[in-house]
Image (tube, helix red, strand yellow):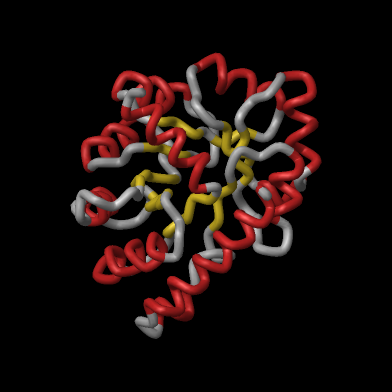
Length: 216
């Protein structure tokens, strides 16, 4: 199995990718560690943050025995994709479909998860070589939209993101999601503001528990 296949499997096995948006640079490593200790294997740092590449590199330098995979989100163009991959990102996500980003990822052997909403976008993304499709924003269409996409397109891998919570995550998995993405529903920003890493860990663990229960 290639490293790319390992990372893609890790995203699915984790069940949830934590979206780390707006985390202060001096807290990013501690937050990432706490969320991973809460049971989340997949960590997404958003590329629209200042010094994102530096933060990806810092998190990526965590001990080698960790099973975490580090990726970058909100990657809107090919230049941004190259930058985050050079910094160590092993998967790349976006809220939209940019085929140049998919191409950069494929050439680098990095998992690509572009954002889609319509069947046309989903088909174009898969034809371009996307690995998983990020259904975004999921709250706009709800869990039933997964089946609406998979009906005509087949068993395409879909990761709903945007509005997924502990209360509804089971509905998304029941509808056919391979994994989900979660930001504020998983990341306790109040705990981060108070430098309470135990609270960050507990919030992540609660979401992981809901994911595991949904997959039983």
